Length: 193
Image (cartoon, rainbow, N blue to C red; front, side, top):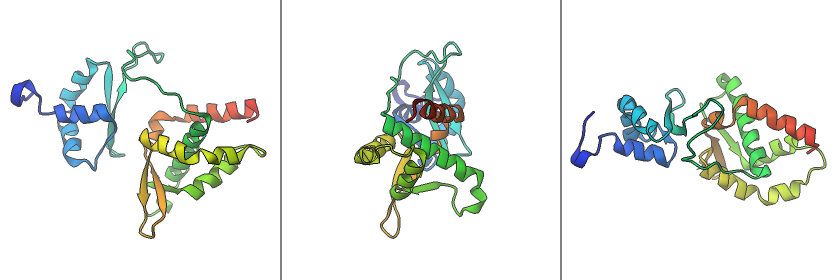
């Protein structure tokens, strides 16, 4: 373990960046520090009840709360925030879209899943039962998309022809796993929503 000035470790900047959120491989300096000092970072963040997760194949890393008892109990460093029903529906749809994309990834010219607001609206209409208040749902769509973007699940991009699209970040697979996806769909059916 190498120390630079005043006891600060040479991986401190990487840890601080990880504490702020997801680090992508496009952040080359920090990404290389995470990979180079992984063996130092892991025990360092473990003291705080955190676990370093590195997804090299998908090009991102993040910190998650360590499971204390195998049942999801954590030390509570990061507060869990509930999402609105509408935001949850959008997350589930985005997760499903990414899953469908990855099952047939060889058919595409890109490794990233892009979705326009119109495509998202179409998926929402297919997902929600007939008779659901879509006007009310769409009224808050922009706010929900902004919230999901703030949480790091999507990134906004303007295409060459000026269209706004969103890149679905692969971290959504970590946060909205297949079990969560199936349970959400089952709950929708059970509650008749």
